[in-house]
Image (tube, rainbow, N blue to C red; front, side, top):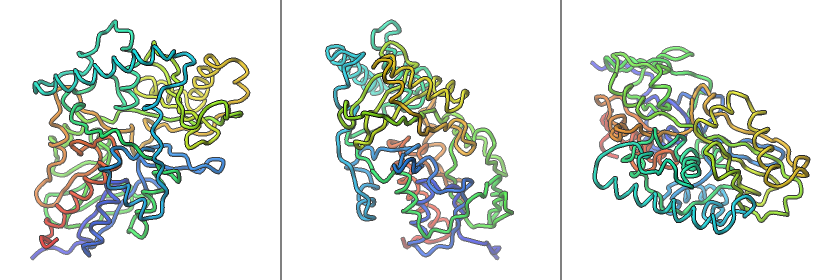
Length: 415
């Protein structure tokens, strides 16, 4: 006789993947519970209202928008969609980066991406850094871009995994906030906030999920926690799952942080314009000026440089950004810039980073991590998306897939 369970499924994590899975299970009439360690929903999608503006401290772009499931869902929910071309697809402000140099840089990074895909077709994995000229004029800036896009430098980046990402180059935004959208889509789901899942005993059915609020029995579980937490034992399994832990360790979360500055006299810049902090070093920020036309600057930091700034706290981000902008624009700008808010995802105990990348030689790690354990334990999240990793919509798709697997695991093959 099958032992009784509290619920059919426990979902661990209320980020995009967990919310997607929960909605699918609710539609199927399943009993389930979502456990979320934070006191909010959204995971690495996080919108904060700062001085009247909803600022996304986590993900902010609906990437590959024409293929992104969240675009029609946002519109159906009454969220406005901004279709303005992103600043990285426009010419940047020429201050510190002449137009002729921008053309040369765009040509070089275009050749770099072509090399990436040509080499990937040969099927041999290696560090992306091997495709860069160490002495190349634009190598430092390409490295900086890698830290924004991948959260890491190219020597830690798998060529085959990097090339597997699918980007249609159509990018939209949600003025009300991407994090606010995920929270809205989670309305009425049974989410228990502030509950940390510590151990899953999957030796028999029902599973036993040990948490900071006690033990919960479930026929199945969908795990959506970030890879860094699986790799460092933040969530443990009994019996142990060394292959899962090793796969998670080969898919670490890189680091990409944001810092927002209030901008006095913003009219000097066009809305949604861009300013490069420097072009000869990877230890630089990239500045999105007047996002949505707002009187502010959204600064991007990534990789090891972001990690170093995190160690100094918010003031380190503010000091660097203001100093770099004053160096570019003149001393009078110091009084026109004021710190507002920023992220520090590497110091977030329930993330320990921003989004995943695969180490060289481990491009198979996403597929390994995605494989179910028996018919009871399933895995979702951006890290197990084969082609849309590092995105909320990639995480959402994996949540739907894991929900379908969990339904099959409890004998619901009719859906």
